[in-house]
Length: 198
Image 1: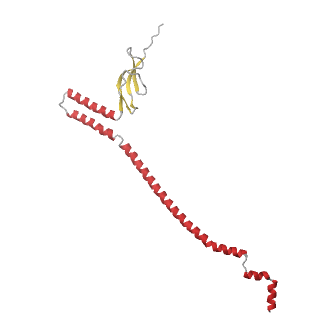
Image 2 (image 1 turned 30 degrees about the horizontal axis):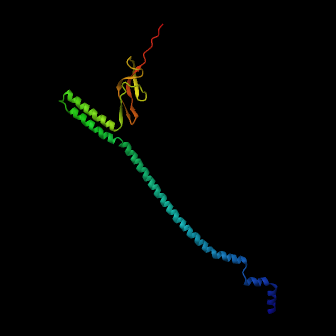
Image 3 (image 1 turned 180 degrees about the vertical axis):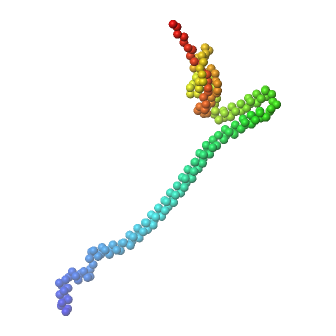
């Protein structure tokens, strides 16, 4: 019996060695199985960190969107108020003109001279208000006709003035910061008609 076992071990030396020694494939598999939990742990930790960063970025984005929306609403409100109350100062200044006119009308027993003085004072107040808000008067009598600021209502011949000269202002014009509000309505000198000799 002992001889038989010995003979088998001599005939199959690889089998005996495999029972005591592991193959390279088995060693590699063991090594991988030993590293695998560490890699999984690192990936899981990295995934947690990435999720935290994603949550932080999402929170920041929501805050930025909320701030942008608040800024947009505030800008819309400011623009709306600017449109509504753009003439607030101008209107406030005009109130004194209205007060002056009402005082003039209230003086029923005033004579013509006092009414004229009151009207002149009111006009002076109004001119000051217009000047304060850069509203300038266009009164081009005696000046050359300018189609950018004047509107010719009619033309007349005149031996005393050069052609295209404004000889009369029917209605004054006005500008606001050099922008035309209303052209002056004027009468302009036309060139004299030349008579043909036969």
